[in-house]
Amino acid sequence: MKSDARDPDAGAASGGQEFSGVGVSAGIAVGSVHVIDSGLAHVPEYRIPDRAVSRETGRFADALDRARAEVAELRSKGESLNASAREELGFLLDAHLALLASNRMVAGVKSRIREERINAEAAVSLVISDIARGFEGIADPYFAARVHDVRDVGSRIIRQFVRAPSPRVAGLPKGVVVVADELSPADIALLDPEHVAAIVTASGGPEGHTAILARSMGLPAVLGVAGIMDTVRTNDRIVVNGEEGLVLVRPDAAVLAEYRRRSAAQRRLGRQLARLRSLPAETTDGTIVGLQANIELARDVDTALESGAEGVGLLRTEFMFMNRDVPPGEDEQYALLRSVVDGMKGRPVTIRTLDTGGESQVYGVHQGRSEGANPMLGMRAIRLSLRHPELFHIQVAAILRAAAHGPVRLLLPMISSVHEVREVREIVCEVAARIKDRSPVAIPPLGVMIEVPGAALIAEALAREIDFFAIGTNDLTMYTLAIDRGDEQVAPLYNPLHPAVLRLIRMTVSAANRAGKPVSVCGEIAGNPRFTSLLLGLGVRELSMTSKSVPRVKQRVRVTCLKSAGRSAEAILELGEESQVARMLDDFNRDL
Ligand code: PEP
Ligand code: MG
Image (cartoon, rainbow, N blue to C red):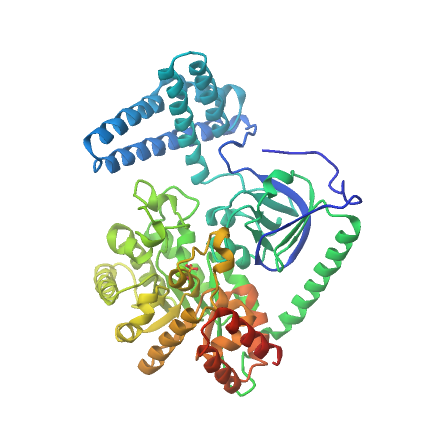
């Protein structure tokens, strides 16, 4: 890990360096940098106490097992190749397996951990470098190629540490701004919001789960900041402006003072908004709008209640599966879900079944399973659950048991066809019948996420099968416009104001209203006050968002006249271009 003992305010008098990226979580933070190197080129190295030797040896053994499983998976993928390619791959993988089993490597790593008291990944990196150097000294093309294999094997093992629970983001000092190439949703879930002031990464787009989590934890965040890792050092003074997507490294004294002033003003505004907590979310013409919270972990319940949310509109259960090697069992899931249901004290809790795959990798679930060539379109979310009953039945059982303790709703992610809903209904009945003699259960209302354009287009048919809809505009925008929500390169193109997205929302709301089924929006636009009048105008009456946004959205609801919002939305739906939509919406909002 890089580190630098410079004076944190060094440079404060000599100007600084400004970077821009994608501002994904508003707020201003002034802090000192803590660099996290995630690249394999920079393997973290730290000293371990005597008592941690067996833990590190165990981490190494686990990483080896996973690396071997990866090679086995590659081999089975290779079965479909033509004979000569298969043979070629076979030789290569044999060489990798031999290295993974080689005494020089395995014993070498263990002895470095034991004797040098260093962490496992650092020990792997050192041993691999030693072995590679040995081959480099031999002037023969065959051995030169082996150097490559050796380094590949090293990377493969080290990658396992990065994917597995990692100590790199836990236990950070107070007030730090974490700067990294990339942070996975699982990494963010491990950050302590009391210690971390903000997040800056070189990659990542506006609505990836890293961005969503940063918002839900109230951490200012700017992602997709090109070049940041070449410039910052641990302990540098840094300003993060999450609203405008700006990062200022080693700013001068005047800039620092200005940002400290803005940060204090923001805290004052937060206190003013908090006073709205006990007031209803009621439009000026008397319609009550339901405002609920999106949460990821049981620890978010208190923040949801403090924000004034009337329930949980989306519980993303995949976070309960992250940062661990094996998925939680039925009892553990039940205990976690029940703590949310109990914590919400009689308010509704909408539990979404596992939505992993793509950027939200869950090690214990995805290990050993092929990702497919295009994970966002592959075996993720409900498809994975239906394909793997051994996982899904356990989760359903835990949800039905939790439902016996309060008003739970069961929500299915990434539904694209009616038959998926029918299959789930059958499973729910089957599981209930199987477990009802051993534990109290309740069968909750069943709803679907509308986040695939095809599902919006058949909302009418889905409405006959389900009890409620939740529109997931994050994925709906991604799949409608074919723009990866987590990719900074196409971030400027990602726009939920695109007329196609708005029409799909409208179509879903109309189908739900005709069938008398509740419909909410739980994508990130639900928590952005810029979109509030538009969503209300499109007929949406329930919004679910990160808790921190509830007061700001409530404030916007309370100044909105539903009738004029409806007229404005009708006019907006006539437009063919997102820039026109943005102009008309901003004009409407300005007059509120
Ligand atoms: C969505 O896609 O809008 C949504 C709410 O689900 P997630 O962000 O978890 O994919
Ligand atoms: Mg989604």
